[in-house]
Amino acid sequence: MEYAIEVEGLSKHFGSYAAVDNISFSVPKNKIFGFLGPNGSGKSTTIRMLCGVLLPTAGNLRVLGKDVKTNTDFVRQNLGYMSQKFSLYEDLSVEKNLDFYAGIYGLNKSAREVRKRELLSMAKLEGREKQIAGHLSGGWKQRLALGCAMIHRPQLMILDEPTAGVDPISRREFWGIIRELADQGTSFLITTHYMDEAERCDLIGFIYNGKIIGDVVSPIHLLEQERAKGIEDVFVRYVDRMNKEESSPGIGGYNA
Amino acid sequence: MRNRFSFQRFWSIVKKEFFQIIRDPVSIKVPIVIPIVWIVLFGYSVQNNVDHIALAVFDQSKTQESRELVSLFSNSGSFTVAKDVASISELSDLLDAGKVRSGIVIPPNFQKALQSGEAAKVKFLVDGTDPTIAGTALNSASLVWKDYIADITGQRMNLLGIGESSGFNSLVLATDIKYNPTMENSVFSIPGLIALIVQNITIMLSAFTLVREREKGTIEQLMVTPVKASELIFGKLIPYIVIGYIGFLFSLIICILLFGVHISGSFPLFLGLCFLFVLCTLSIGILISTIAKTQVQAMNYTSLILLPSVLLSGFIFPREAMPVVIDTLSYLIPLTYFIEITRGIMVKGVGIEFLITQVTVLCIFTLAMLSIACMRFKKTLD
Ligand SMILES: Nc1ncnc2c1ncn2[C@@H]1O[C@H](COP(=O)(O)OP(=O)(O)OP(=O)(O)O)[C@@H](O)[C@H]1O
Ligand SMILES: [Mg+2]
Image (cartoon, rainbow over all chains, first blue to last red; front, side, top):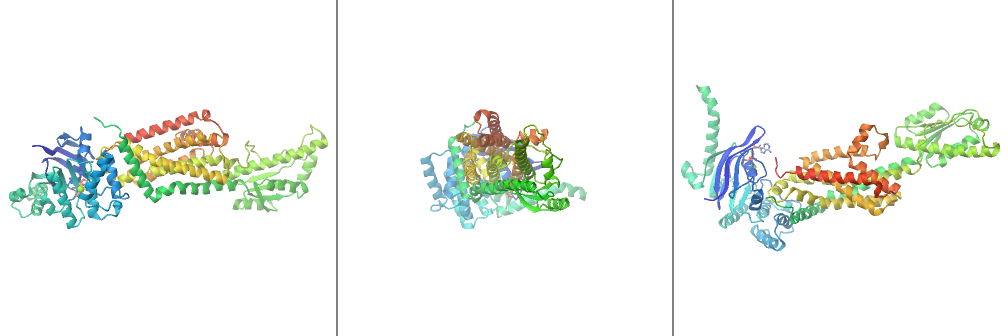
């Protein structure tokens, strides 16, 4: 099977604190992978290492079959990234933002115009080209950020909480776009705290305290396996189980 | 395989940065407001201090001759007789209170001294709090005195013939500095002022350029793109060169209009070397931007550079008067070299052949700082 992401023994330490602690998982191509976990569990840190923005303390990372460390240029040309924080130029217009990333990714003038029109229509931003990005509302901003992140037609998109703070209608629209892109062959890694979004993923994986819990499986499969009603129950169960495991040696000793 | 420097990416950065600058009210105002503020503060204070230094007169002689001497002081334009006093203590009170900056004490036997060569001392007192004022006061006083002596000697020689010794060489006026005290001070400081303004505009603007992206989070988005450190840094440099140069031209024009300074040397050479200096100080700013993590840090580093450069570059204090250790430090400050260049071209009218050292050093500074900035800017957040 061809993999979009392969992570092997990956760790990231900030000083003595292990934000990501020896994790391994793989995600096949052409899937929407939901990367779930509570606040501070290490999702963004893992993602930043995948994008080459942070250097791993240990471990191997392969993106689209290529080692991230040695194929930086390939990875940069084929990966689209939307960071957790809105990170477009808020003082520039919608069009200037798109123009900028088009130039940075080396699109020539005619390709740029075509691509811009495609993305504007995809993000439903037509007619707002001249509007300042900072003045857009949450949902529009996220769709513009998505547009900028995929201006170079990346094979893999990594989206860190793309729908945080976005209303349900806009979120549904956003997922509509993502599903369409996935059907056309783009692979996705998405983090989210919304369980309805988790259920829309092809595959999901859990991370807690820098460690991966369970396997990368489909949501339906997971529900059957755990005999749970919803992803949220599984999520809570995982966290409880991990907390018990971590504190059990101490408590055990105390009881004996 | 490493990707090569791409002009398209570089140009995208230039355009983006330019659009951001013209949308930013602060960046647009800096090259206009800073020159005005600095020129008004420095330029005028320097000029006003040169003339009309308040002078207290303690005339114990009260003769035609003594009044003549006092009027020479006030006619020189450097002094304004603020008060006639009746005692030494009154005079020193005025000096203590800062009501006058200088005082002249004419002895009771002044007239006799002139006529019969009796020993007498005319005292000139000066408040040394502000060295600039004190220096100007001393220079002007010594000039007035020299004129006066020359005049008297001339009259004497006419009367008594050559060779007659005079008995009035006893004025307490230790300094005999050789430059023309009336205007030199302001003419000397304007080139330095222009250099300082250029430095401040460029460093202040460019020091924040990368830090701002770091704080806003846009740098993270840039890091995942194929853009190279050199494309980013040179791309950011271009718009600031334009802004910095506009600031320079603007301050030059103000100084020409207000102070009537003119450039004695080659004008194109002057413009060219100012361009070099803009580039040099921008590279300092960009380097700060790669080192600082936050805008507050960038601000601190900026003042860490600006303050010593004001004090050590020779802008305020002559470098000749500095202790060797401090003077050695001033060689590490690009402004030092550029002030030598501006004074050389504007005041002395020298050509490039006298400025080779300064120009070479500025080029080395620029290249070194840009290379360090490119190397320091790693495309990771660690
Ligand atoms: N640069 C850093 N220096 C020190 N600690 C860091 C740094 N970045 C992240 N951490 C810590 O690492 C842990 C994991 O952070 P991370 O941002 O990866 O969590 P996350 O799963 O993305 O959380 P959230 O859902 O809130 O976005 C947190 O405890 C965080 O405080
Ligand atoms: Mg996060």
